Image 1: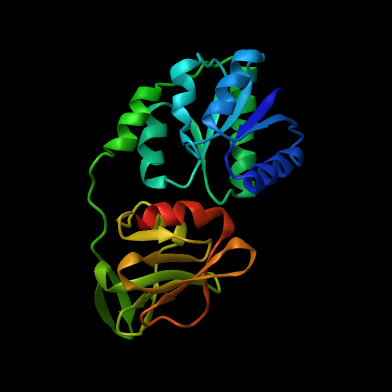
Image 2: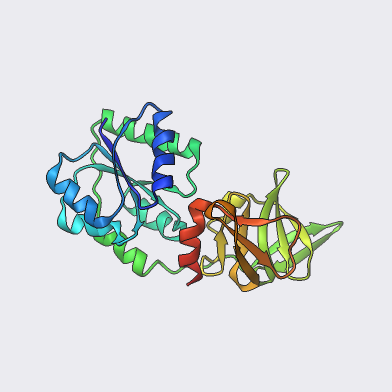
Length: 251
């Protein structure tokens, strides 16, 4: 299997390469920009499989295929989950959300191997995906949550929640009045419920609401620390893999 990675963050590319090596997948090439990728594709035999980041330092990776006819299978790696769900399902393409999860990567590789062995061909409509990136399909997001407090059911509006976090296998909502409520839902299942303009998953443990960010401070290992108005149970750290996308989201 001839595999390449197109990812502008070199540490992320190296980590993905290491994870793939554990699955007996050897990465032959790592590319880091649209320009570099176009040159490489014009001078080399195209690979069997590409791990492709959507947002590269010099543009969207789709620009590569405006100039290169790709016949490789593609697994997208992206932090833009609000786009991914719809865009990739329409095209029957696999995708991985950052930071990459070992088990999800293994499932994606197995899916590719199964498709390769059955000689299934994927039709990739890059124009369709680009349209969805620019004009994502409008949908209704969850505006309120219910939680059980003793014998009572309390209604919490989404715009009152500073952050969602996981702790001891539970998922909690921290509200603007300084309270924490246990929810009957996982962080993963919250993914499709939250308004992406307001909420961002900064790490495996936290979703934060932009409207309650009090301060953002540089932290060790090129990470960021977020300070919210009320929540102070534990430090909220933007994982290194998420920093770039978090900054884009803030804008």
